[in-house]
Length: 486
Image 1 (cartoon, helix red, strand yellow):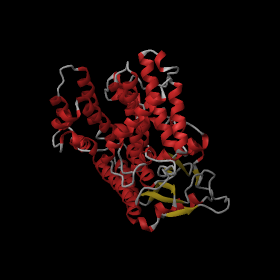
Image 2 (image 1 turned 180 degrees about the horizontal axis):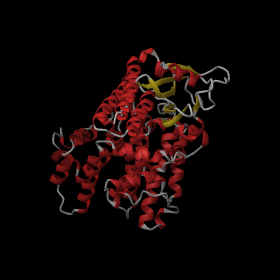
Image 3 (image 1 turned 45 degrees about the vertical axis):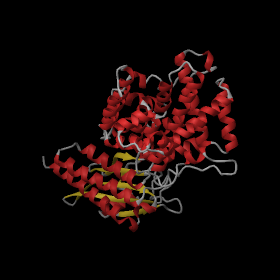
Image 4 (image 1 turned 90 degrees about the vertical axis):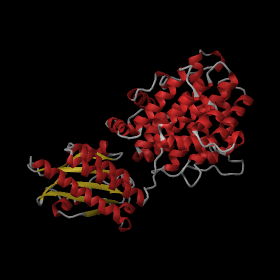
């Protein structure tokens, strides 16, 4: 478990420039719920504050499902009038959440995961309507926010996606347990922390709990009943996302429903309605290929179950360049603002690791008296585990020591056979190559960047990425040099 990653994850979320606007939208949307005098104009004004949200609401309102209700819808006020106050309010909350997790990196995976959350929200809403005794609006939000913590991890810790999936597939762990094992964060606790940090109301948080409601739906207290229904919806969506066949999905979802004492006809009717609602949101997706969850919802008995895109695939060249160039721009600004060196170097390592899809990105610093390189900061699933034994004695003949003392940028390739000059922590993942970038100030060495990953990340076909890596190395040296003059 990587307990040290928790503050990094919280910091990444907090640094998202769109998050304050998201928090304000949720706060205001919940306030409108409690205000009996709230009007369509109040809701329209809330949505119009966010241009991206306005655009998505209008696109949703003009989806094929709604066109027969009132023709072309060109204003938010008209959307509220035609679709209804609560329909638009819930859509605003759902789409605000979508803005928080949408990203070019692994876009199809993230969009599939969002559609899964939308389906379970509408399923919980439909079941509440059929069973009675619960607020359908509250059930929608309760089920939607069940996945908030996991969605935040997928969006802000993409370097861990492959290991999370591996823990689920090989160790048989459920999603929350796999995330906690790999990242050191329990998704529900993360969601509560973020909701509290940004002032989201308790009504948005009270069903974010590790407690499990059990028993028959009709025999529970209203609060336990709501939690049980939300957990049923989430578990059903998870079966759809990972089931092996159409038959297995139907069998397992109905089994979940029967355990809650929900009749087959009630569950299937709510599921069909949730599917239709979910498909209305498809027009808002940017992925060229339909996410796997949508394909699974429409699969028939003769269709092989689609599998979500591999989370191990490396970022595309243009994505690499965008991330690394953004880091260069941020570092340039940081140098003028006297940002602490630790923060500058940490941001560089994050950009290198995530931008190139690396296994390891480590900053070593030279301890001259002991004549050794010591790992100070790092990114990668194995860094925390191996850090205590990653020190490099320069008096020994390891390849890493040789590259550092040469003062040149060089690569180290995975050996075909065990080798005495390769450390036991090197090439423990899938990477084939390690690039080493020594750091110098006035020709005097003071450390190096060690970057280990797939060979494709360092090929000449990615010249822009290689150039930006060297630029970041030069900025690191400049940052240290500027501080040492003071």
